Each structure stands twice: as structure tokens, then as C-alpha cells.
Image 1 (cartoon, one colour):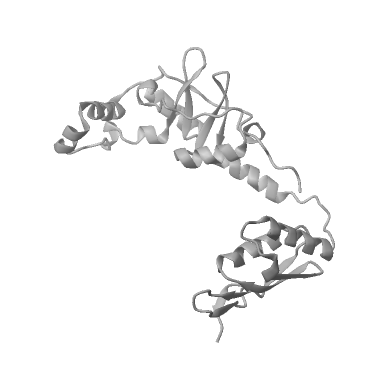
Image 2 (image 1 turned 120 degrees about the vertical axis):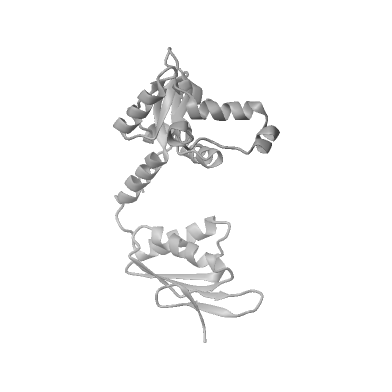
Length: 248
């Protein structure tokens, strides 16, 4: 299988559009619409990253009638500072006043696993890529999906024989913490894989099918696995479409 992209530099978008912190909100919106982008890295006069402006920063606006409205009692509990921040978000005229200043960024050599972790942890769709304080690219969920699409489209390895296919499937099962080679029987004939045996958690069925489907040279997978429910001892066999169906 071809080598997978390892770092941000392998997949990031290098041609980026930035906006100055002192730019007008109106101009930043025009740029986002013209470029068909949903986020802009914000830089200072020296080109250093100081924040990011996204569509989310523009939703609560007085012009749209969508500004945050809080009951007086809640405003009393939150304090004047929070209420003042809401007002700025709804009425500000410069990018620096409404941008997200606490921006999370990554370096070009950041592993992709760390990028995905940050996106999930921070609930963001894109991360500026920074070198020496200056944005040099941006990595988004779309970049990750594009890289995944390219990897799935590549199939340069010649198909191995049935013995090699079976060996690869069993080896992958053994590598997984949920795998049990003693409970699963794998047979291969002309690239057709048969999965037999007993499983004790229905979720193992799909995982075993995925293991077999990913082995190079596999043409089709037939699932004959029997699920034995541990507490009741009832057995469930796959139906014709491969999904589990109770036995009579």
C-alpha cells in the first residue's frame, strides 16, 4: 500500500488568504464570499498570526437581528463584562474586535493524528499552519477528506495469492486488541473470503468484515459468523445480506 501522508505539510492548503486585524468587517465578509471560504487567518502589520475570523464570529449581528439577547436577571449573574462582549460581537466594525483571538494553530511538521485530535477537542473545522509566527497554510477537514480520497483511490500493489490473503487477514486480527484468532476461521478461494466461527459481541462482525475487505486482493467477503449472546446463550446467524438475523 502507498505511504500515507504523515504531517500537515503533506496535505495543507498553501495558498491562503489572510486579513489584517484593522480591516473592516464589511471587507472581510466580501473577501470570504469572493473566495468561497468560511474562515480567514487574521494577521498584524508584520504578518504574524493574531487570530482567526470565521462564519461563527459573524452570526450574532445586530444587522441581522440575531444579536444575543439575555434576560436581565441572567445579565446580572453573568456580569457587565459578558454583556459588553456580546455588544461588541453584534456591533463591531473591525475584524480585530470580533475575531477569535485564542486561536489554535499547528506547525507544518505536526502529525496528522495530532491535527485530528485538536479538531475534535476544540470543535473546529480548520487550523492555521504557522512557521515562525507567520501563517504559511491552513489545514481543514476538507484537506483530510481529500487526502483520504486520494489514498483510497490508489491500488498499486499486485493482488497476492489466497494463502497470502489469509495470512494478512489473520495477522491483522491478531494485532487488534479485540481480535480472537481462535474463534474465527478464515478461508480464501480465488479472492473470495469466507468468515466462519463464533463471536460474542455483534460489533465484532463488522470489524472482522472490514479487516477482510481491506486485505489486498480480496474480491468479496462472505460472512457466516454466528453471534452467541453471552447472557442468554442465544445464537444469531447472518442473513443473506450479511447482517445478523436470529436463528429459528
